[in-house]
Length: 329
Image (spheres, rainbow, N blue to C red):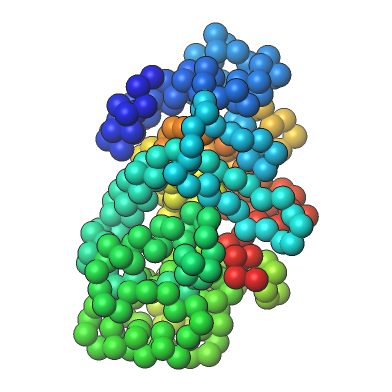
């Protein structure tokens, strides 16, 4: 597989047949070039000859990114994205050979769902890149802020008062605004100031672990809707081990870009895919992961619906804390 062609191809996928063909092509390439993934497949007795459909492709447990270097061949990475972790805990490491692929992935997905970045002022309730080097989310937010070119775009985690003034000014000028942040920081803002925002998308990027009492998504979204005066709370779903994100426009239903597809696996038989609409472990094909592994079995539980949308219902292992909120501990 010519990886340069693949980069171009994945972002122009037009239908399920094209996705499936590229997924099988990517599997073949990664089976040959990714030693960790190949050994995993062989351990399952699932060699290349036995994979003739997308449904046959094995999904690598996400924990391998903590214990192994998951790469296609040897290369000097442009960046190593790392997950958040508590003191002493093992973190995931995603060795990224070509940052241009990640940039094209998040730019293409954001603009497909929300339109041109240049139309927005982007306000981030996240640590700045200097405070949390190695976060794929912060890398994306930092780049979106720069690309928005709006003078008020920036990081506001440590100054909620300034954020309030900025939001009110943007509202007065009818400026399209995206407020993106970790859940606990958005909740802090919603509790400190009652706002009525008409031109602002409020987007949360993760749970509450480590900072506040864990609450279910519905309760969190109700509190945020009341605090910001918005009809819906949007959400971003991504992780260190992926190079693509899915987005929800509200009600916790996510849609993924055309080069990313979500499946569920049976909880008692992790090698079998679950029926549509039934709760199972979340498996993800992310074709932007061209130089690592595109086939990931996550620790999230969820449901996938007939139209390809999905929702996240919880975690398999509550002892392994993962979440963007840990970035700011």
